[in-house]
Length: 557
Image (cartoon, rainbow, N blue to C red; front, side, top):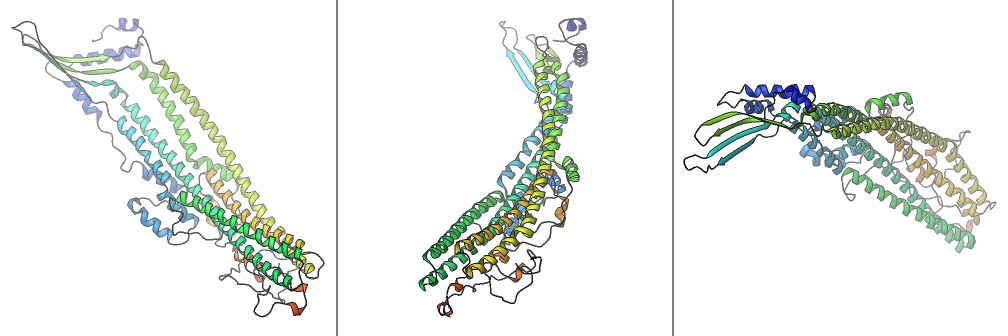
């Protein structure tokens, strides 16, 4: 049906602009001459072919991640296994763990695969639907008449008219998808770094608890010998045995916690927990100076990819609302050409048009849906903007709090606990207090060590969360020191050095069994082939650079 009556079209409720468009299409179709099929050819030429990204946008995602300070091994492809083998051949650090996760994490591989959906939409938006070929053969009831044969070819003119808008929306959605995938990559990187620090800290605590258990067993063995010699009461012996058992239980719990955290790290790395990979037992010391909060808040606004993706989504929906505003009047429009051979042998050729007239419905429901989506998208942007600001402030507060706790442990609690144990040991030696008070003092000293390790762990975890909230590597990360907290300084057995009056913590090893020797005369001392309370195996590779805990008078603690 060809429309040529403008008043009629307006009378049935079609807007003026749509009436003019319909009349223009009709006039164009009339320009087609007999024996020519112009319009379908034009549609096929104009449809063109959409060009797909060569790597489905993976390099763009890698660029977004690299701009935010994360190590990206671009173009690894089939060499990922070789890279993982190389990095796991030596103890992992935070950076090498992130590199492994970014090429080996299964969930991240699935996230990258989602780029294919957006790329497919870009491809589809640059094409129109295939033309439809039709034919009919009608047999006449007159013997002398020939069959009526009709051939037709029609294509969607609606697809052609909306192609520009569809390509623009699909391209914008592809960009948003790359930002979303980039945000997921940064999340995996942050999860990996957090799992790494938890595992390393757990190994520190496990090493501490293992040595405490070892010292407890040695102390209980010595207590049994002094008890057999009649110089230790049954109550004190029972307390020593109970303390050794509790220390062994704490060591077993620390081992179980360490293995669980190793499993968590292996999961995010995409490795087997039983694999031949490992991490050191020493966390870095805190930075000398932290980043300023105002600068981090501004950096977050520029760096958060999920916030950028939310803004992009709102822009896409707003654009789609405008497109829906005019396409809802267009309906489905198909144009083509038809050639017919009539029963008398005459041939007819001409254009065809099939048009959905928006009389009974103008697709206002589509407009309402897109408008609702726009309101939701705007609300999501507002919600995420507030969440970004709050998360940065929360992580910054956690970092400063952890740093303050570390200072309290280093400069106040641990020196005080060490002094208390030294004085309690002296008083117990002279039988001024019981062994229970000494055991309590030593347990509090051990708990202070573990609390210090955990505070240092919390400091690095809070920095990971701060970087996650900012959406970028923290500027101060470039100043991370090579110094590490050495657990050997806390767990090596105590040796006798009667002339050591000054020095740092490294001058006097702390971990020692109880000294029961003052409970007896020299005739009851352990014989030469027995283990002395002051003897022990000193682990190799002691670190002497940690200047923690010194009395104000210069005495070693």
